[in-house]
Length: 277
Image 1: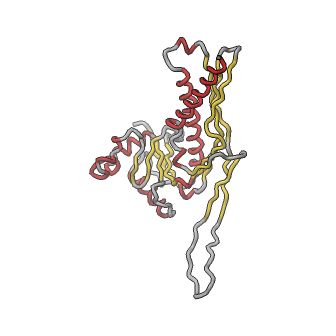
Image 2 (image 1 turned 180 degrees about the horizontal axis):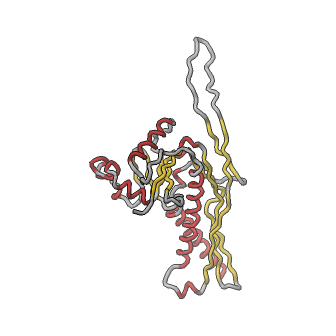
Image 3 (image 1 turned 90 degrees about the horizontal axis):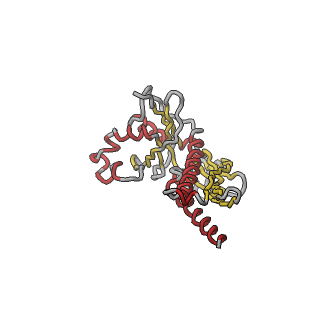
């Protein structure tokens, strides 16, 4: 009987962790190029250069583009998030401790996934020309948009901009972003609970984990989905073991993932001042 109960507990816990990770874990995983079920300590993302079309003479040979190929290696790292669940403590609390720990573990791993992606974005070297003591402005956004055009980055609804919450509030003050006169009543940023909005062919996502330096300069990133790669050797897994000496289960959530910059031309860094007024 006890074995059956433990198996039911473990299966339910694993399902709750997985669901929590999918629902409220990573914000950025689906915004980049992904490879799943990687075998080994690393994987390789293929990068192909631009082709050039040419003419040919009658009955002549078709010209070969001779595309440049390069490889971007992405190293996987192992991450863990564990905690104890005391069997009798669950009877004394008025909160579902199992669900709380499942959500906490899933959120910790989700934040780590986003951290890996942000660290890859940080290696980009294309910056919008800074404006001194200025946050996110329409001028900076248009410059990033222009840089994408100069780099021939596709305008295919796979562009993303991840910004801080301060920058999100600054976006709301730009009429072209938040006024129904420009975007229509159905596309207002206040009409949805998803905290993301499509504007200028770009999905804008507020995020609390972006880097900020000692001068209160927040780095935000404007990028194409194919510019960054995320690899997963093991998605979120849960291991639960019973420890009789503690009369508790130890719940270990774990994953193996990595991220790498594939094409620096597809990422633009927008630095924004967050100095308090």
